Image (cartoon, rainbow, N blue to C red; front, side, top):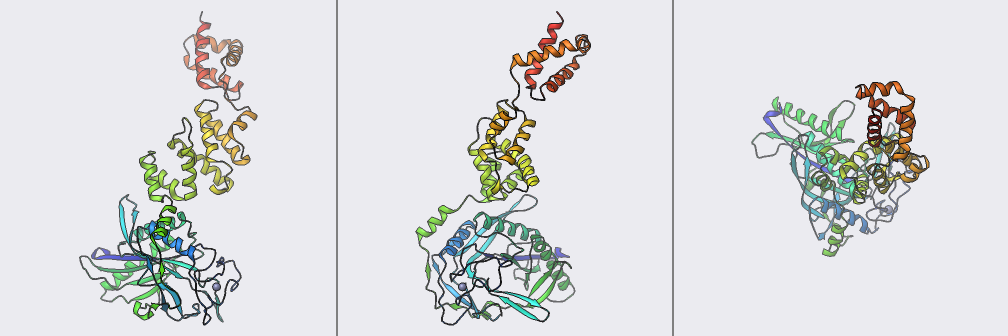
Length: 485
Ligand SMILES: [Zn+2]
């Protein structure tokens, strides 16, 4: 059905900024789910007449980071405007936002699709505003909590470059990952600190004019975003095919029924009667301020992935898993930077992705609470490379490092785990075994050379697996040959 039509999708993403205080007053930012309602409020964020807002500098720093990370042209001249509308969770009767003069314009974000192709999505604008309060509807009335009122909010608006639910999901996941990398948002969609709203329309293939768009709300997961978008595309196509027309409206996503439903007709920008907020002077962001933000910008996930692939030879999968979370990526980077002889980035990546992640899962640890430092893992792998311990023992030692936080050499020493490579010690063990097993010796000398493995096994049993297998093999072969004479 959709073959006839081209989907046209743009995403609006609202992200609360993780500042200590609100956007225009000194109120604390509290957890909107756990905090007692209406405990973090003041006359400014309650919209009392005559109160004066003051811009939160930290929120501007954060917005600047996001604008730069999304390749936007940062605007020096920032003006706050009033977006007028009435709603019970908006005490002032307007929301302070940015309209004609936002902080960032004309950026872009590259996303990777499931078939590996890269697609560039335009970022139309990034602007600062304030969040509203929160309504809770009960059977006999509604409750309002203004704790969230005035919390710094960033809106990121894409160009209508997205063509499917899958692309919408890939774009939104990348944005969330970048916001988390910048440590400006936790990405917790369940708590509503990150809200994603696609504008969805279809048009006949080849047509220039956009179709009528529908805005989708209540999407609290990436799956809901992808499924809701695809559902809406199909609904609109069916509507047009049956001779109907799409109504411009806001629709909600019903997660259990997996379908969208009509909520209200959508306002146009002119309905809001935007005008410059007379209480807030223009905010000028000079070159020095922009430059300091540019310096504070960390290496972003896409750059990390590319570096891991191109410089370290990791697979796409390994690179994306290691780069997924900034703390994990920085742990890996620190290990690579301190790598001693033998611990190549590829080896380190394997140990982190397999053994370290498994141990973290089993023990319910996150990378931030890990008792094992990157340097300690490098030291452990150095012991393997030098032949002090083998891979199997190294796994045991790593598990103990996770529990005790001790360094690998002290664990190897105190538990006597070091491999026995000392020829004199091994020779005396081998002599005893050969003297005690005349039958197998005779069979070996009679041509059953695969019995060598059995002898190696005996030495391993005698040394509790600590004998250096390469040394044992060599010594056994020579010693058995000597029996011929
Ligand atoms: Zn306040």
